[in-house]
Image 1: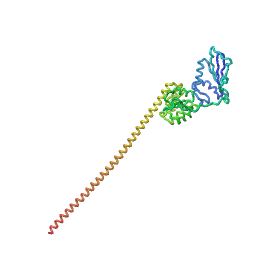
Image 2: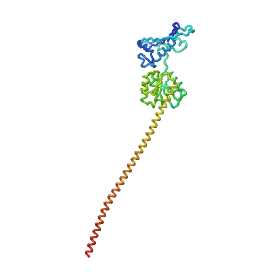
Image 3: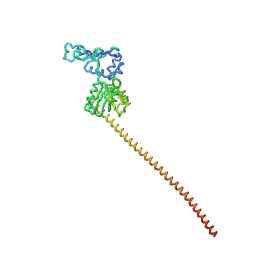
Image 4: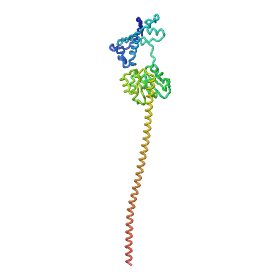
Amino acid sequence: MSAVLEGEWLRIAVTDTGVGIPGDKLVAVFEPFEQVGEIATTLEGTGLGLPLTKKLVELQGGSISIRSVPGEGTECSFTMPIAVGVDPAPGETGRTEAAIAQEEGAPDLTGPAEERPPFEPEPLSTPSEVQAGSGTTLLLVDDESINHQVLDNYLFMQPFTLVKAYSAGEALHMLDQYKVSLVLLDVMLPDGNGYDICRSIRKRFSASELPVIMLTARNRLSDLLEGFDAGANDYLTKPLAKNELLARINVQLQLSQLTHSLERLVQERTADLERTHLRLQQSMREAAQATAELQVVEERNRIAGDIHDIVGHTLTTSVIQLEADQTVADEKRREGI
């Protein structure tokens, strides 16, 4: 980074030694949501940095330009007017960031990569101090630390525990570690995009089990539809408004709780119906058994009646025959006398 006085203007230039940008793509870098070059598919961000910078510079009356050589690097420079009546201190003209850093004892981040101090990554996320320990846990997935701080401030004094992930892999890992009630998911992440993460979440949790609110600076209808197609419950565009964010979080949590209550009620009613059905089946079996026993008794009575009729008829016939024989025998005896 360097700063040079040009008459009444200060030109500030930022140079890198990256992959560069093709010449036919240089104009597009100032268009909102545009990311160009081969690195665009893996680059963090949403493509709003340069458009916003251009607008801010032009509001100050300055101009911004960019030049790049593919394979060598890119330089972006802009001009700003010098404040009237303020003279630069002696020797300040043309001071670079490296010189200022050296004077102030700060590490020089402008030299070659091999000479820069090693980058210290942020530690893995731990539960935020935002009402830690409460029953409702929110998972924030965003690669920007400033956005984590914004959510910390917004959720301060709210009945939530906020856990944070900086990447897609870390987010999916945290879903195994914590009982998360709602996910606040940024669309642009260094190791993937929020749409794919949302699809992965939906393979494990339904929309009512784990609501997902997408957070992004993109507000085009196609982005909104893609978020809902991926399984998101809601969609918020950055910058976030605190009251709207809290309202949508509470609405999604209430809908989730209502759905769980309805599902639990349906399960209880289903269990009651199953128990009633089992009792009815048992009663039907008992009735069938009683009917079968009654039929056996009736059959026994019928058989007994048949036996009685047959035996009675046989006995009656035998008695009549005996009486007839007795009468004949009596007559023969009298005649013999």
